Amino acid sequence: MEKIRRILVPVKGEGPDDDEAVRFACAIAKRNKAKVVAVFVIEVPRALPLDAEVPEAMEEGERSLQRAEAIAEELEEEIETEILQSRLAGPAIVDEANERNVDLIVMGLPYRTRLGEFYLGSTATYVLKNAPCRVWLCRVQMADGRK
View (cartoon, rainbow, N blue to C red):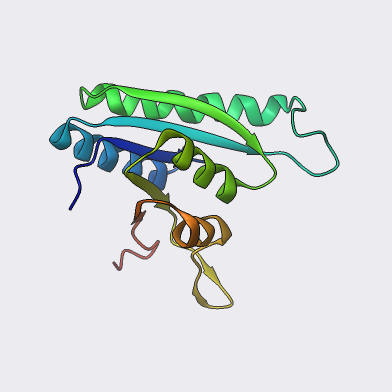
């Protein structure tokens, strides 16, 4: 297995799935002396230009990335953060992984269902299918406590 030098962690809010992914990425980074980059993707509606200002989403992104920085600081790990704007999060994450030449993407996932079945979501599915590197998913525990 190749050495892990750069880790990308997409965050989307202040949920336990993001926290878990950041903690996991920082632990891997510490062990491998790797760099961690957390990104928040603002999905810009097609009705707006791609570079449109979306203040509410920008504020949410800043809060999410500040939370990632706080977790990294707790773990005595450095983290770089960036806000991206795209039509869809999946392609933006894969493009960022390509541009930064990352060795690993760590994504947090909530436990959610659709039509009574576990649902991975379109972003995670796109990243799993198209990422140029390894992808590790951190799914949080089910709401009723089962694993």
